[in-house]
Image (cartoon, rainbow, N blue to C red; front, top):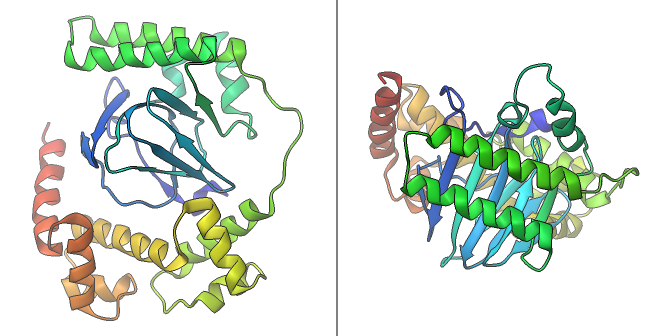
Length: 298
């Protein structure tokens, strides 16, 4: 079912060392991801540490709030969306399971799969009031410090900290034995799948609600509960994301892109795109095409 959503790829996934630490302050991220807020998933584990402000983690069935000096673990392949308060400063750490599995076919893989293969473990809040969770948070702070003071042993130091972190996690996490079903989660899966298939068309609230067999008010409630947004706002964000991909990966004109992602007016498309990215579509194409070429030539 996760194939129905955007697969967000680790920016370092093609590197020899596929570990990524992102520093996000007041909406600005280093390194910079695409920046469009839509539900997505990735094959990496993700840990987040919040220094200041608040973070809002939306999954298909609930919203969790992560306060300052706290954190969260997000399992691989979990459909989610991370939003932050305006004053929020947090670090996000992403890495594939092979970095804590030691080597292919080794015994450590079993201890990784205990968590990664458990569908009921979607995410875990980390609070300093819990001893073992504080230990993980302290390790995340140490990982953060390695980014500003890299030594010649940087990669090895990262691996040591990640192994310590994972050992603490598997010693203390409890894997549930029962599967919990949730109506909101099921409905959100249907809503988001429908948007993914029909975002380029005229899409009404009536049609969206009908795809899950619910009323318009229930559709609105599900979006508000799961994602703190409206279906229209999410649809617009999704269309802008698809437009950004076409701008970078094709030579289609602005009019062709506007029509292909569901905007009836090219001027409205341009206005919404600039409101979101601070760039006109043409400027976005030039900037990101240049960055893409730089990455290819490395």
